[in-house]
Amino acid sequence: MADLKKMLEEKWDVKASAGAPIFAAPAAAAAAEVVESTEFEVTLAEVPADKKMGAIKIVRELTGLGLKESKELVESTPKVLKASATKAEADDIKKKLEEAGCKVTLKGL
Image (tube, rainbow, N blue to C red; front, side, top):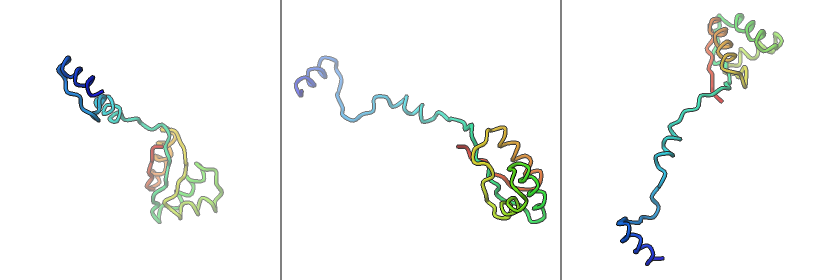
């Protein structure tokens, strides 16, 4: 094997090196490629004390929970409202809650 290596180096005028990445450029390009999320987790991050009633109404409307469950959810922020929502649905939920004075975070899945 050593003789073959030496012959190839002499014939082709190259230097063989072990462990050098051959396909470094495609790997770097694949790592740089950004994939945008299509599913989002909607989290109710914060509700001001003076905005709780409005937030409870919206949470009831969005989740279908009862009054007691909605109140508990609003009072125990941060809390996940929707574990998996489309981009449009997540934006709609966020818009409604922010209009009521709440802080909402979206996390791509």
